[in-house]
Image 1: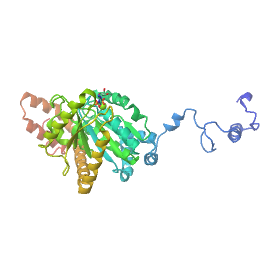
Image 2: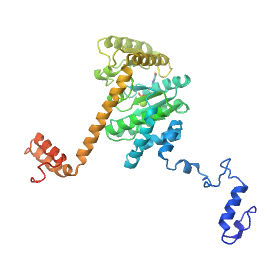
Image 3: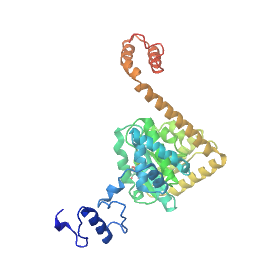
Image 4: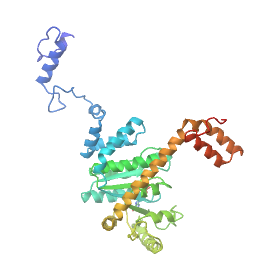
Length: 388
Ligand SMILES: Nc1nc2c(ncn2[C@@H]2O[C@H](COP(=O)(O)OP(=O)(O)O)[C@@H](O)[C@H]2O)c(=O)[nH]1
Ligand SMILES: [Mg+2]
């Protein structure tokens, strides 16, 4: 090394020891300006702190970090869960297993309604109200309907501007595209990790239309349907089936000139509800109005959700629903897994195109085709030697 690089406080180098003696002297003499305490057994910190935060986390890092409510690690744990890489999936399952005893202590609320009804605005208003009350909330979005609408949550996130600055709130966009089962799994597991991190309210927004309502219904305790006044159910794209999934109906945008119309719509829905059966045993579904923009009616809706929790907890319906949801979820995962196994089976993959051709040509009935494929899958029982 050139002479001029020596620091004045360093001891003169001795033959064969230049490097070691200089480093030790330097570290002892000054601190590095990045940390208040410098330890000799650690490498000097990089000026770019990101490098340190981005290091690989161990199973224990994830578990302890999430349990301590560390937002950076929580975010990374969710990214791990969302990863499709086999190594990540394995680690993610280990993390989840260890977090599982710390999950479940929250109220999970799903919010649905057509695009533009005000779901994100509603979540922001309700979220701010909850933070003021001392709750910690996680906001998730579920969009299993398509990969095309991936960008939609970005718009949502900018609309939740106030909430995203709130330290007691955690907003997570929907996992990027994948199979319906994949997105459902990721969203459910993300919810569990958020619970382990200490969030006591989970709000789930349906972003896609179509299957997302049933998906979200299957993972929450309370399901809210936001509506608009003045648009017929058909116009709103809301099927009667969706109304039957809801635990409360809310006519949003009850402000300004729209207020009177919103109240009229509420009364109409209230009448219609009398002829529908409730999705939750012992719970009377009601219709309300609110303005997500002004915040009017938001506190009342939270009171309804709390009343729901009390009533259904006392009756055992709350716990029973969660149990049923776990079993449903298990079944869905088994189905998903079997499907993957089947369609990736080498033998099935080999003969399927040909069989499909025969079915399309009308020379092979579809039922026989299915039987042939399943036999192939089940271990080529007796069919391995047949002509292929
Ligand atoms: N007047 C009024 N506008 C609202 C209300 N809630 C939402 N909006 C507006 O409706 C539009 C769609 O809202 P958004 O929350 O993005 O709907 P989402 O697609 O269901 O998430 C935005 O321009 C909001 O500002 C409300 O209570 N009153
Ligand atoms: Mg939205």
